[in-house]
Amino acid sequence: MEHNQSEIDISFMRRCIELAKQSWQDVDAPFGSLVAKGDVLIAEGLNDAANKVSEHAEVIALHNAHNETGSSNLGGYTLYTSCEPCPMCSFMIREYKISRVVFALPSPFMGGYTKWNILQDEEIEQFEPFFSKPPEVVGGFLESESKEAMKDTPFWMFGSDVKKQ
Image (cartoon, rainbow, N blue to C red; front, top):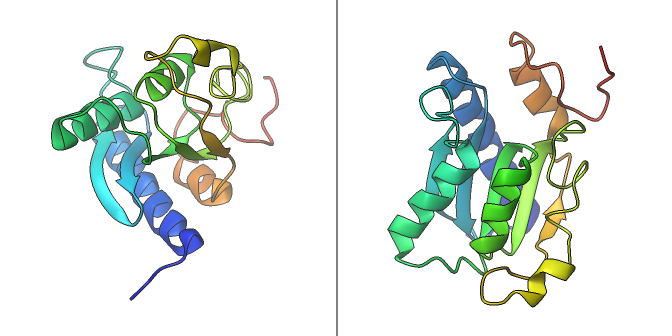
């Protein structure tokens, strides 16, 4: 059975939200990510920053995809994540040459797309072979479902409706 992209996106984003819930149950920040090629899941990542600050869900998913594919060039792949990637994760996305990023919750205080111009920065692509051209970015995808999953956490600073406290 052939699936259209929106069905694939919904399925993978819902999986990211489940991973985020699992991360919270494992006593870490509620973030989950995965890497896919088309409708094929390649790798997943749960946040593990409580143990090692650089172990964000996106970074773990990217490293796991590298291990699975044997390549640091993930052009043609999509990274799905329950929350907008931070600057660190956004640079990793560009270095792994991810073609598409789909995130649920915007991160207006620290996002690598809405706050900082990393995912869409065309200037850094001149530093080939290190950085790719900007990936296609789909933000706010299933945002309300991801926000609902975070309602019992102290992470108020995510979402398009967030206000400074």
